[in-house]
Every structure is written in structure tokens, then in C-alpha cells.
Image (cartoon, rainbow, N blue to C red):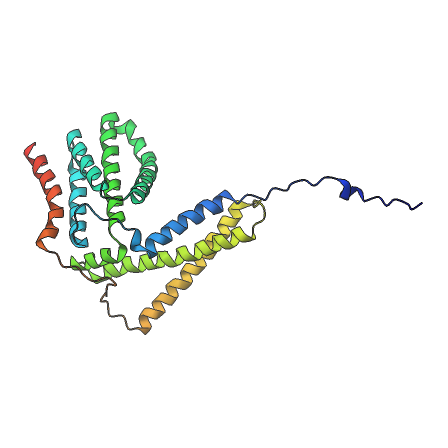
Length: 269
């Protein structure tokens, strides 16, 4: 008789399903946020249309005038009218843009709320409530302007308002700088996520390494940008990437709502 060959014990045991390791929550969340920020900086296609079509410089003037009204309003019905004006502006946004606007607005309000709450013990709940509403309206109108004006047109609008070229250049360099560093940090997070098999034992060490690498890269970018400006012979004049749009009479309609609100506030005093 032939002797029966027995299999090893490790082959006779049933297979146990192996669950793949989950991605680290820190890497996934921050990669998603960096991708959204990079899309806003590089792709102005997602910019919404404002309620009244106008030029960027007039829209900026209307924003500054509205913010001034919010800062000077003291009564509840004045803040209520300004809230209705913000609601009418939000109706011009598409569904996806409106969801992003509401999400970012609520996030910034939640960040600002802990800074406002300590004033409760100083001024009382009524003043605190007005201060909270005023802060949320300021953030709401600022977020709406960010959602309806692309960055190149913002810079051209600043130049149309005859702001100093140095100031416009600083804003432009800061935005380009932010885009480059966001791209580098997003690539670093994706590389770490691909190389990470399990959850890191020391996540804070990983974060410190990423920020250290980002600091060195930012220093390299700053030196390279300075050398490029010296080689090209920068003379202090800013050349916008977007054309400067000249205002027509119909574009001045965007100033009508804040002016009407200012007249109503003045007559009721």
C-alpha cells in the first residue's frame, strides 16, 4: 500500500480573510481640502455669477460699502435687512456652488464663534448676539465675493481702482506662492499615503516632517522668485493676466442696493 501523504498543518487551516488597512484619516481629509484649494486657485471655471452682472472693481466697491454698513449698524432690523440682501445674493448661485458657500460659511462662523464668546462676560448677551450676527454677515458677504470673482479679475479690478502696483504685485505673488506650495504639499501627502501600509505610530512626527519639508521648499521658491525678478528686470509695474474691464452705466446698478440700505438706515435715525 502506498503511504498517504499528509499536508502540513498550516495548509490544512482555513483561510482567514484579510481586511486591507484603512487610509489614515489625517491624510485623506487634508488631501481633499488641499485639492479643493488648488482647484479654486487654478480653475476659475467654478466661479458663480453674481446677482447683478458688473465689473470686478464695482463689485469690490459694493462689497466694501456693504461691509461698512454692517459695521455701523446697531439695530436688529438693520441686520435683518442686510441678511435679506445676502440671501438674495445667494439665490444667484448654482446648487453645487451654494452648498460650497454654505459649508465654508458655517465653517468660518464656527471658527470665529470661540473668539466672540469671551465677550459675553464683558458686554452681556444682547451685545454679544448683535456682535455675532454682524460677524457672520461680514463673513457671508466676503465668502460670496470670493465665490463670484475669479482671482485674475480681482487683480485687474484692483488695478482699475488705481491701487499701488506694489500692493497688487504682493497679492499676486502670495497667490502664486500659495498655489505652488499647495501643489507640493498635496504631492507629499499623496506620496506618504501610497507608502503608508498601516497607521503611523508617530503621526505628529510625520506632520512635523511635512511642515519642515514645506518650509525648506518655500525658502527655495522665495529665492528662485527673487532671482527671476532680478533677471527679468522688474521695474515695479504690474501687468495683469486678465484684461481690465471698463464699467458701463448698467454696471453701476450693483451699487444701488447698498445705497438704498444706507438711505433707509439714515432716515430711520
